[in-house]
Length: 125
Image 1 (cartoon, rainbow, N blue to C red):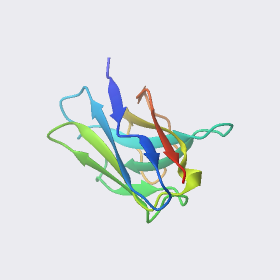
Image 2: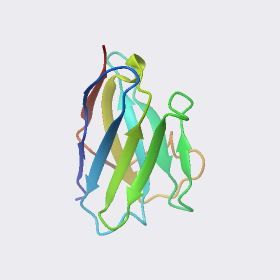
Image 3: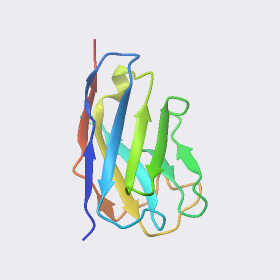
């Protein structure tokens, strides 16, 4: 059973930065499509970023494009989400997810098999 553990959430002022980490219990992330999702209170879960298993390309939802950066450390089987210029509307529980399925440009909205427990991010002054 694959396990994912997120960390790095917390309280940040608008305009600040946070980096989320997601440690995966797999030998390598090379064979997985990887994504970050978030869910704000009263809202549906939103896919915000992903890395394609096909070619390593990254994709972002319009709501975070230009502010968030997804990356992975292959040697540590860890995925990161660097969040800059945070806004109050970024407040949500953030989840990482992976799947062995192959997705292309639609990996932000596709289905995933393994999920972390989530980490809370609150952006407020």
